[in-house]
Image (tube, rainbow, N blue to C red; front, side):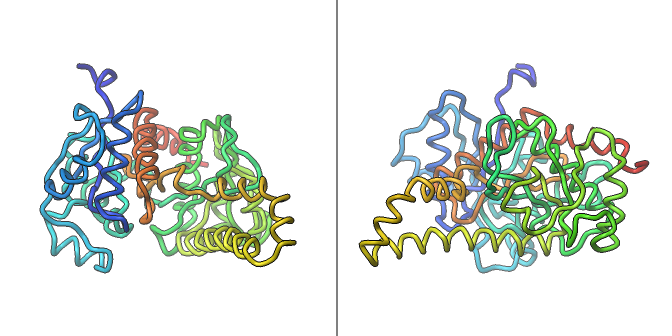
Length: 348
């Protein structure tokens, strides 16, 4: 069987995530019954995985269990846990990808452990100094051919700070990911700053702006401010990891508060219920836009292998979608697209 004919294989850490093995295995089981399934290696305690599989319909041709006797607990420090647990499921899953037995890694476990396990085994792409964790967020405007209600932000947690060269790499990686996953032929990419002028921002932002402005093949839109984030004026926002993580958590918190306030108001007064009934379509749209379960997970970009970090609270639907996103990234050669985009970055 040729590489093109061979099905895409995803190593799925079955022991990661707040819901434990149940949601992960259920998501893989449901995916195996779809019209275009993905070959999934469920990595974890084979007894626990088997017990959950026995409760669900699934196609055994598309699911293989790979035993890992240990796993990282949620309250453990990533570096110490990985050293103390050499047979942890995230180690075994990442090793399957390194050895070529799987094409992509997906985990809903610790972000730190996923990053470290990948970093110990995978190579960084040429010209990429630092990898970045990207995440989608809901916006007012639609993006790409599919009218995606989400835009992309990176880095959101893999780095504390970033140099101009790092930001340029983030821009190239984010652009490639938006093209592939959102079917956006020419995603608009911008730097997050405190003003739209090219001279605004830290020295790293100013220098990155100059480099990106001269890069062919990149649809660079300049700088954007914080108020542009929910509006969705661009498709990809580039920032350092510390600030990106703060912004992402704020966006998640605001969206959850709005929905909770609507529920609370509906329960309090008849007039509120009448008003909210009139606004119900808008509230349903907000719920849909802020439902992270539909997009699966956040890509860890910059490695020569596809890595998707699913949300810790992922249910079966989110896990299924995270695996599908990983398969799509492999099928469309995400790593190769990023590498091609880096050509000319040094000389811009």
